[in-house]
Length: 134
Image (cartoon, rainbow, N blue to C red; front, side, top):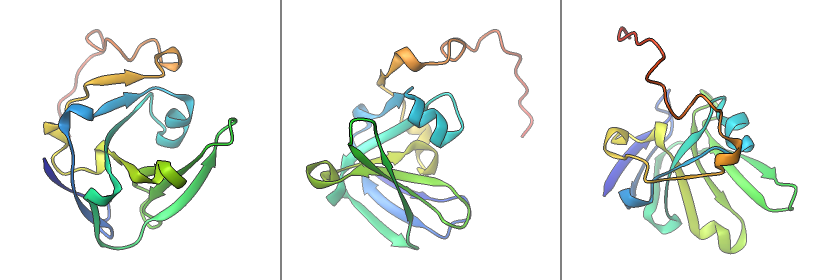
């Protein structure tokens, strides 16, 4: 599926090809901290399938306890998260951040990882009152 994406201030734009069946939710504590949210949704794709059209992301390198490095790309002006990737062999895959994708409504997650870190209330929000005003 061909997608387009952008940061909140629209300084950085991109296009990519993604496989909708690979979209997933990560509940790990790093994703919670980096997103300020209970989980993060990502659309992984080959790095060769992603083209930055405008702007240049700022890169933050997060080193895990294992020593594994993950590069977190975001807009240096508005702070929007755009993608993550690794180093070496892991740099061949880019995880596009669902919120930056223009066609995100068409990308339903198909899997979840790191469920042991999931917030206990985030799986069933049916009891939380709804307010539809934007």
